[in-house]
Structure formats: structure tokens, C-alpha cells
Figure (spheres, rainbow, N blue to C red):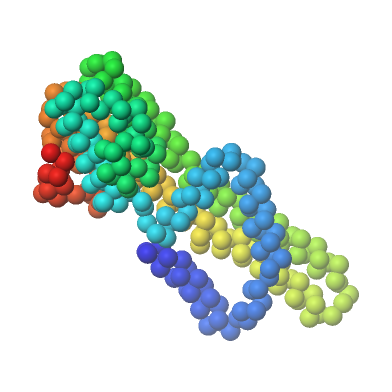
Length: 284
């Protein structure tokens, strides 16, 4: 919601200031300049990034408007899922959750937490590391080292969409100059003609420069920064899981493990101690 408000403020501020200075709004309507700038930026983006990263950027962009899918409900369900697994294995042994771990997407236990099940990467991280814990019996410090290495790699992957979009933002002013230069080329071919025609071509060329800078710093750059914050936000889910598992390996009870995971969640999305306690009561 705030992102949408920011987009509107950017557009309204620029347009209002331009009109207040007696500018003609129709002069800014240069579809061919937009085609050159946006088309070149899209092509460069596709050349620079693998298809998997392109899909991830497109998947994350709607979250700029709608907000992160990793909200308070998601984190409550995540803690509930981890607690349920730990509690079930503590009461009935590791074999009781073997089928849940091996086939989480068909598991009745896992499917009690629909928001978490939509994030396949988080589910796989949980099951893979829980499997390592149950099969190897590694001490806490060794399991933590393994998980830290994996989380470091995940952090790079989560920030990759932001970096990819930021490179587009950095290139847009250059593509605006390309559009402007092409406009000047057209203008030079019109020398000797009516002054109104020459003036129109010069204006179109200058609009190309304006649009490149406007798109870069008004929209794509801020969108890149927002994707970076979304990636950092999502990383908290992995840190939460790691904290819970390390606590159990260290000998703490599942409720204590869930509490250690809660403390690593983003403050604005973190359930309170009472909220978590009430949530976990239904899984006991």
C-alpha cells in the first residue's frame, strides 16, 4: 500500500510541477522514445540474467504492491509447523515423522500450515536439515556450521533479484541518452525545414533523456531497493528454522525451541510471546 502511494506521489509531483510551470503535457507523450528505452532495458535484462532469475524477479514484483507474503500469519504457521514436528518426534520417536519429512507436500501434518506450504524453498530447507539431524546425530555446533553455509548461499540467491533490477536502473539513463541521440539524428535530417518541426524533434529527444532518468530513479531503483528488503525479510524464515533446530539439538524442549526462533523474526511481523503460546496450544 505504501509502495503504491509512493508511485502515485512520484507521478503526481512531477506532472503537477511540470503543468504548474506552464508545460504542455502532450509533449511528454513520446511512445517511440518509450519503446526505445524500455525495449532496450528489457532486452539487456534478458541477456544479463538467466531465465530462472528473470522468473523470480517477475514473481517478486507484485509483492512491492501487495506486501511480503512472509507476514505475521506466515511466521506463526512456520513456528507452529516446526513445533509440531519437534513435539511429534519427541513424543513418538523420529520414525513417527519419517513420512512427513520424506513427502512434506502430501503430509497431513505439513498441510495444516497452508501459508508455509506455498513457500517450497522454506519447506525443503526445513525437511533437509531435519533429515540431517535425525540421520547423523551431529552435535549442535557442527549442524549449525552446515546450516550457516547453506543460509549464506540462500542469502545470495534472495538478493539476486534486487541486484538484477538495480543493474537495469543503472542502465536506464544510458538508454535515455541513446533515445535522445537518435532524436537528434532525426532533428539533423530536418534542418532546413519548418522551425516547428525541428522544435518538435528536439523536444522528443530531450524527453528521451528525461524518461530514462525518470524511470531509473523514480521507479526501477526504488523497486530494486524494495526487492532487497523483501529478500532480507524472507531470510528471517531460514534463520528462525535454524535457531529452532539448533535449540532442540542442544537439548531444549520444543516450546523453548519455538521461542528462540520467534526472537529472530522481524520486529514488525514477530508474534508476541502470548500469541505464540496460544498458537502452539492447538498443536499439543
